[in-house]
Amino acid sequence: MHAAQPELQLELNDIVLLARTGRLASWHRLTEAERQAATDHHVDLMVRVAAETGMRKLDGYRLMTPMDRFERFWVMAFSDLAGAESWIAAEMQPPYGLYGYYEYDLARPMDMRAAASLVQDPLPREVRDADPRDVPSLAADRDHVAVVCFGRSSAALGWQIPEPALPAAGSSATGGAAYRLLEGYRLMSPRADWQYTWLCAADTMDAAEAWIDAQTEADGREEYLQRFLLARRWQPDYFSSWMAGGAAS
Image (cartoon, rainbow, N blue to C red):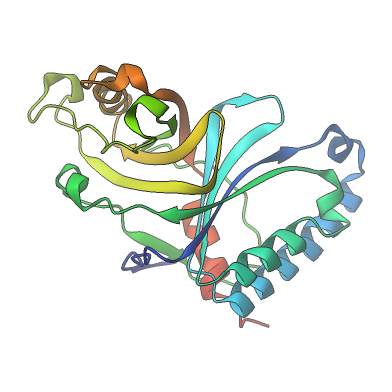
């Protein structure tokens, strides 16, 4: 059973934790019983931390083309820095944390109202109606294609972050498919090749590609570094239940 809930709108002063994660080779050398025990401990801990910190968002994306140990991209949100710190400490806690690849960056939500016209029918937030400690067989959402954009402005533009470009209205490239999600986050500590992230989800690969083309073909985009990764949403109904089910026993 699933329950549809309205999407929680983040505040611009919320703390967002962007994570690039994966498995280390040592995980696969454990026995099945060892992996299960580590997973059970980890899920119980993280569900409790989600409840204790008042976690506001937990969205995962599985890359279609993993990059070395980087297999999944996560967007998490908290009302304060302490919540993000608690999450990082818990996620890396042994035994489970010994076998993971983790890269974290702190960010803030961006005001995306100027691009809101792209998303006419946003994805509902489905929440699995079960104890999150009862882990299902996890799978990617194959009904939608997600694009993760890692961008960086330039000194010539005063490091100004651009607005995401929109595919031309009625563009045949989209095949009439709908866009379901458009989010933006700016890093609190920009990297040499990464200053902001956009997330876009569409119904089809053609629509996702049209959105990428719009970003690369927009006027002045030659001044920006942009890297795009294709992904699928990672079992969204289950991970939404981590926030809803923290009080379960």
